[in-house]
Amino acid sequence: SQQGEEDPQALSIQEGENATMNCSYKTSINNLQWYRQNSGRGLVHLILIRSNEREKHSGRLRVTLDTSKKSSSLLITASRAADTASYFCATDEGNAGNMLTFGGGTRLMVKP
Amino acid sequence: DAGVIQSPRHEVTEMGQEVTLRCKPISGHNSLFWYRQTMMRGLELLIYFNNNVPIDDSGMPEDRFSAKMPNASFSTLKIQPSEPRDSAVYFCASSLGSGGVYNEQFFGPGTRLTVL
Image (cartoon, rainbow over all chains, first blue to last red; front, side, top):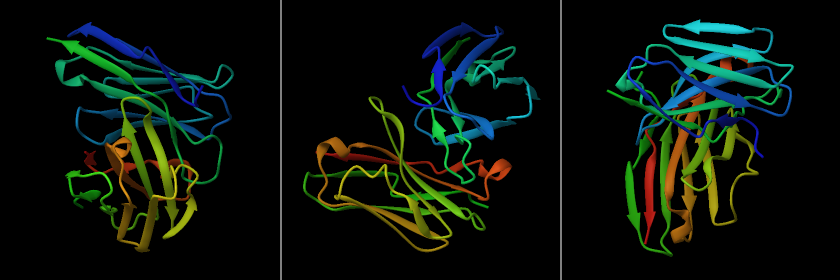
């Protein structure tokens, strides 16, 4: 399977609930990033967590990273209908360059 | 800054025709990426430039695809001849470069290509 696999593939929740998405990867990394894609639009960077960090917050977003398990999670608290989108994790696979490998994404639907 | 600019936004063409997609990266960004997105295959990296030089084109499907970056502010992705299986959304992205925290990528709005 490819680097950066998200789980679940699809998630449907009610507004106000929390949404948790997971990402697993295979190689060592320098950092892991999460992106969001609204339907018909390009991806937008949400947050970056470095390999020596375990947790990072940005507004209603909380990202964790467990390098021993090669996994990350994205938590969106108090979800809103506007959070409906696809969410992708991306890793640099430890290379010094600028390439990222994106996972298949989690499609999140937040019902009002 | 206007962000990454792509043109056209939509392209409908017939099989066998040449298609040229265009991208203007964010000024000052050193790296440029072309991706293709489909429901079946997800987001695929086609080619990556650093300082206008192609670094990795292993994702380019076949010889029908070619990409150029003649200067720091312009890149093209050409498909000749096009086939129906090339139908997809093609994204261009750019980043500041140098890895680490500088490898956050900024995506354009994409070009939706339909080959009939």
